[in-house]
Amino acid sequence: MLLTKHVLPSNPRTLSIHTHHIHLQQPLLQMALQAFNMNFENYNQLLNECINKKAYREGQRVHAHIIKTRYLPSVFLRTRFIVFYTKCHSLKDAHHVFDEMTERSVVSWTAMISGYSQRGYASQALNLFLQMLRSGTEPNEFTFATVLTSCTGSLGFILGRQIHSLIIKSNYEDHVYVGSSLLDMYAKDGKIHEAQTVFECLPERDVVSCTAIISGYAQLGLDEEALELFRRLQGEGMQSNYVTYTGVLTALSGLAALDLGKQVHNHVLRSEIPSFVVLQNSLIDMYSKCGNLTYSRRIFDTMCERTAISWNAMLVGYSKHGEGREVLKLFTLMREENKVKPDSVTILAVLSGCSHGGLEDRGLNIFHDMTSGKIGVKPEMEHFGCVVDLLGRSGRVEEAFEFIKKMPFEPTAAIWGSLLGACRVHSNVDIGEFVGHRLLEIEPANAGNYVILSNLYASAGRWEDVRSLRDLMLRKTVMKEPGRSWMELDQVLHTFHASDRSHPRREEICVKVKELSVRFKEVGYVPDLSCVLHDVDEEQKEKILLGHSEKLALSFGLIATPEHSPIRVIKNLRICVDCHNFAKYISKVYRREVSLRDKNRFHRIVGGKCSCGDYW
DNA sequence: GTAGGGTTAG
Image (cartoon, rainbow, N blue to C red):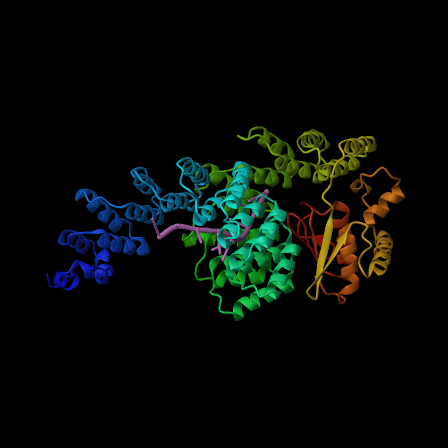
């Protein structure tokens, strides 16, 4: 009783001072509700406490009290309940309150739309928005900023464009919250020019709008543009926060710009940016994609809190570097720690880690555990793809083919592509031919498929088929994403395209590539002409091969870096067989460690041997 | 009272 006297005020007006005691102790809350003649102010104060502390049960009691006492809550109070239930992740309760409202304000609509969009229910959010328009309620800047975050997917983007014109009509286009939401939507739809235009037209900019446009470029893989924009905006006085750096790190990961990445890391450490998990995850990924797993692991080990993404980023790192044993060790640790549950990406990383690391049986066992429900993640298409990879790598090409036929999904191009790769490595022309042509039907415009099938025919001496394949490719007017390789030297990126003659040291590089070719031929290098599908004579083919961007970058590395130091090269596509071979000769003849990152993985080549075991 | 940007995989 003493405590009750102390906590419960005698005058309802002073309730607010004591609410933090009350809501923590339910019996006292109950007493408070009974003791007072509750009015709007009291209810609102209690509810505010419940919203701030996300106190679901306590809020429910307040709600129940309102119903019991037949108190008639205002639109304002009902809207606060929508917000409260949304914060407590109970959309059902929120929607119930919303449904029971006979009168709704723009705020009630917006709060409900926001609830759905925050929980990822995009279509429900959009539906509600349309209902709102039909009801004659005018959206405000809050509504627009919210609803645009739910404009994803093909249908969402179409609606998003229409909402854009509505925004112009209602004069909200100058609003910085609406603007950042809008430009983000365009960027996510791949319409970076529209995003840029929205950004340029904003009368004022802040951290969020700047971050949105930088991240927009980075997420589309326009890494150099993202970096350039970041530098420009920084020069114009933009403030950065941890989200900005996350976006910049995404761009640097793509570019494998280790020195620049370290610079950002140092800056983050020096400034007083708290160590947010998201930023640390980005750092793990950046170091791993820049080839430095030791740094990634150091960050991972010192994190106070880890999410599934932290584990996944680290696992993917080991996987891409072919460190299968580390993948399994870390996965075991994750399961032993039992703080974070593995998700579908985790298993994807583990399976592809086993594949890249040559641990086929271990990978197949894990897939088996997955299908028998021991892991708690249901197998998806990508996991099936990993199994095809695992079987193919261990030479069980027929088994992989049978596995595909029995899959519960229609095989995707990626799955056939994986099997085609296996057929090339294990010279299985029969299955390879079937798979190759199946793949050309699904993906007639992917030049990579023609090249691998050509490699396969060439290995079997079927030159006539190589020729007809080339003709087929010409007829289909295959557009190939231009191959590009680059390397970082003293914080500057040197980029090369095929047969590129734009580099300031092009003469030297050209001479070097030819010199290397001659020298390597003396010790056994034979150019793999089946990597070239142009209709030219053999001499020309060899010339084209020597012009491949990886060879230019590797040769530049030999010239521009000190003797015996490692050469780091990045390629935007998968490396071709001939260039892979060429890199092996560089590592052997010049005693250089070559680290080559292609679209799929890292190739660490030492003394003529590659960590990929010639399977990629 | 309601609002915008972020990390792994493909």
